Structures are given as structure tokens and as C-alpha cells.
Image (cartoon, rainbow, N blue to C red; front, side, top):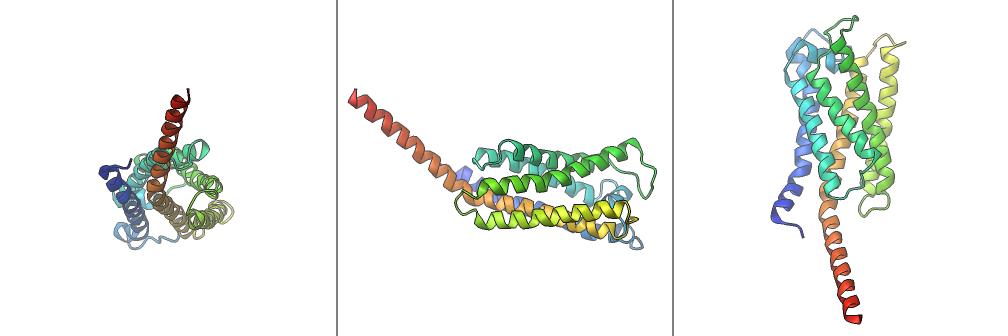
Length: 232
């Protein structure tokens, strides 16, 4: 049975996720102009600007996005969305990676990295690698589910964009001499956070159906048990 409280939570799930997504994208796009208008967001990463403005909107929204992602995993498991196993673990890596990267700063505008900067870097890399992998696995599981076709298409397209963006960013950080690394990272970030919003929307849409199906299954089991008792 779906209680009114659970219905309210279901209705608020997708708006909460999309609000976090909008704040994160907004911070990544517009916070650089507040930090230093002379610095180019095309040539510097989001982390570079976050390091110049500790505790500012970039770090705050990234931490919020990570926490919302962890909440999304818990809600998905409770609503019986097929995230259990590796997809759930990868989504948790994404959420924790964002929180760690927000809390542990990198070094601003330097090639000599400190210990905390390495923690920040590897947490970020783990997060951005984990999310598209989780979504591709989840897209395979959702193909058999009801009303999942549109979600599967979006997850596959956005995951492919994210993988391509990650490859371009790796090239830019190495042989490319950091050319347009900021632009590449922002496109990667946009594709990944939109994926999160798509997943949140899907969980909101499928939760009532799943709960109803579970209630029907319980009724069938109870009816079967009653019939068995009468027959004996």
C-alpha cells in the first residue's frame, strides 16, 4: 500500500534531484565570473575555480549533488528499481566521490600537487568514471521494465557523451597541454548530472507501479495460502 507520505516523497524526488542538478550546472558555469573575470572557464577546470573560492558555490553544490545522489540510491533500492549490485556500488562511488572532492580541495593553479590535491583528483576521476558505467549497466536492466524505453535511450546517449568527454579530457590533460580542458570538463559534467536527473525522474515515475505490483503479489500469495488451507 502506498501511503500519502510516501506519495509526497515520490513527487518530490525528481524535483529535488533536478534542483541539485541545476544548482551544480549553474555553479560550474557562472561561479568563475565571480571568482576572477580575467580567468577563462575554457582553460581552467571547475576544481581550479573551486580552489580559488574555498567554501563557495562550486564546492557547496557539488557536495549537495553527491548527497542527493546517495539519497537517490537508497530510494531506488526501496522502490525496487534494479540498481542492486554493481550499479548501486558505482552510484555510491559517484556520490561519495563528489562529496570527498568538495571537502578535500585541490591546489589552485599549480602543477605541483599536494597530498590533498591527489585525493581530490582521484576522487573526482572515480566519480566521473563510475556514473556512466552505472548508467550503462542500469540501461540494460531497465529494457525489460515498463515505460523504460525513453529512460534507456537517454541514459545510453548521455553515457556515450560522457565517455567521449572523459576521453577528450584525458587527452587534454596529457598530450593536449590542457587546451580547452575547462570546456571539455563542463560538457562532461553536464552530461553526467543530466543523467542523474533522468534517473531521478524514472524512479519517480515507476515507484507507484512497483509498489502496486508488490501489493498485488502479496494478495496473490495470501489467496493461494487460504486456498491451500481450505483444500487441506
